[in-house]
Picture 1: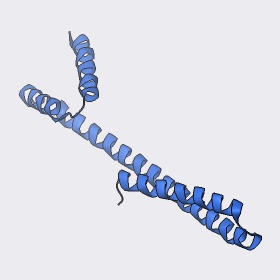
Picture 2: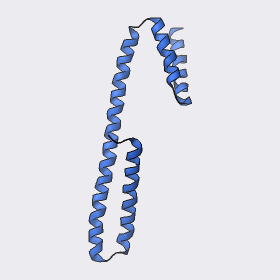
Picture 3: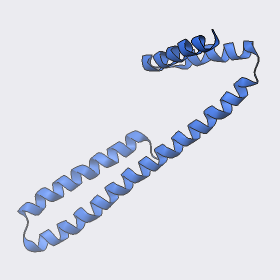
Picture 4: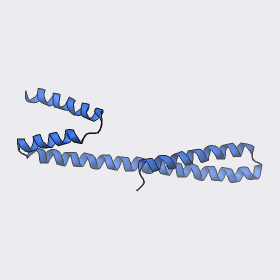
Length: 116
């Protein structure tokens, strides 16, 4: 499976190839234009395929993450208070961005209002 960076590179190369072919087409003879048009068509199809595959994989990953979150929520609901606290602390430590911590802080505030 290609990584997102690899897919972006493929997309960038294909987009550049399409641009190059368009430029060459404008300067080409009639016979060369036909070959360039064919290459352009194949390049556009390949680019569309790469984009569609990336979108589908993204949706599948999002669905799996959602399913896992639901499973974890069910597990947490049956856990002891000490276990939940420890998992919460570990979740905080696992965050890598301020945005993620801000989102967690907002959820904590909302939960405090709900139980308080």
